[in-house]
Image (cartoon, protein in one colour):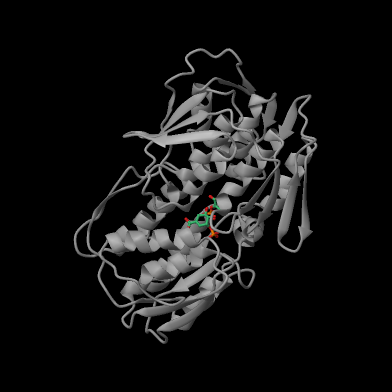
Length: 422
Ligand SMILES: O=C(O)C1=C[C@@H](OP(=O)(O)O)[C@@H](O)[C@H](O)C1
Ligand SMILES: C=C(OP(=O)(O)O)C(=O)O
């Protein structure tokens, strides 16, 4: 998946037509990938998904689900975490034949042992093909449910829990999932429960445990909302723009299922005022004074960390952060990647005490062309791109954005950035 195409990114200071600009965001890959699994698990009638994401992660899951009934016995999820975790649970319960699930080199370093252990304890037949605890996996047909109650740590990846939740209604004896605190990425678990509820599935909450009886998904029609994680780059763009600059992001809703809507109150502190209308949300840069320091716990919205770090660096706002643990096991080690890239702007990122990270940004400087490495991580490219408002950037491997936001560069051009292939 590596490509060598880079972009020199510049901002045209005198861009005309800055008013009434609208961004047609991609739809959420998180919502889409849940709905694809729910649709595949619905036997009575056909579920309709509108506004399916063009993100590679979603296109990959859609293609792989469509290929299972054919002679395909190896599924390659590429670098899509949800696709890997959701498909593993889906196949472990539904496959009629032995099937292998694999991914990129990085995917083979992203842990899956907790999910595999949980599935095995229910009765699923799963083997590791390379390293214990990591993809690729070989999955055999499910025979008999051996357990109806499991405990699972909540602090590694919520995707394991979402994966188990979605297949639980198919288990003959149902399933009780006891999630051990602390729970990270809780809004993603709530999104799963919310979408299952829409498809007629009842998930009972008993303290920290979730109980799902054997039930049938009902066919529904669902329209996927625009992606709040993708929206975060536009909040950052406005935060770094001159006072009065505005933009409208289409398709975002106030009653969203996505936890990354947390970008709104965070960016409000960074001078971005936002209001909803019928079409989406309008962002405008105000002249509020910026804080010296911001303290943020990213436990519930880890995908916003890169956006906020890059933006605060350029605004010279220091950050004190917690809840970053899961960043180590995402598309890249995001803490390391952020540390490397903000150092280029004379900012620093250090762990001041266990689990507490401080970014010092007062010495931010941007005096010459800066080359941003992207580490095969879409969010590294998109988080740093708005900093081109401050000076020219050379951003590596521009195709990384395809994972979640294929039209990102086209959208960036539409608001006045100049992109030159290098
Ligand atoms: O369930 C989901 O759709 C996701 C959950 C989060 O992962 P973790 O639960 O591993 O933090 C998030 O980072 C990822 O981009 C999408
Ligand atoms: C972490 C991410 O995705 P995933 O875990 O699904 O690969 C992401 O999109 O930032």
